[in-house]
Length: 69
Image (cartoon, rainbow, N blue to C red; front, side, top):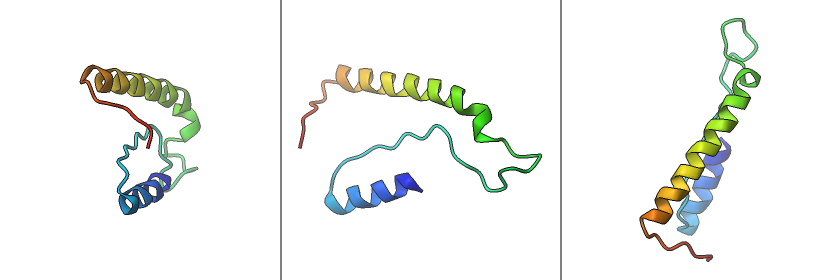
């Protein structure tokens, strides 16, 4: 939901954006059959770092110009 708010503002302001989500809360949290976020938070954090670092490497190697607005 948080990324939806960012997406809406960026869309309205015509600002490019990307959202990378690594962990989401699920409906039914707390039940015996649910996967709790705390169980996967370390794995999600490590995966997030890996994805973002590789994304930036690819972005830079593709000769994209990164500038501040």
